[in-house]
Image (tube, rainbow, N blue to C red; front, side, top):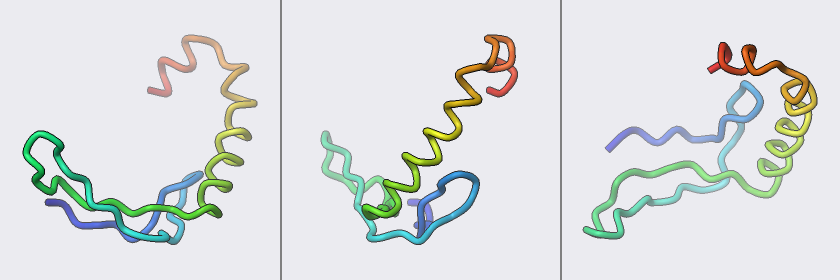
Length: 69
């Protein structure tokens, strides 16, 4: 099991997490990991960051997008 990072990564920085969620393998019911969960504020921040990034990204050429990955 990996260490739980207490937060969510949005727009290049870590933000405070709201809670921790246990991830369970449905086939074995074994705990796979624990992940930090963001609240409503984190969701709003993530959507705003994604919307802002999409403006420039959508103007990118295919070659630029390939190099970014």
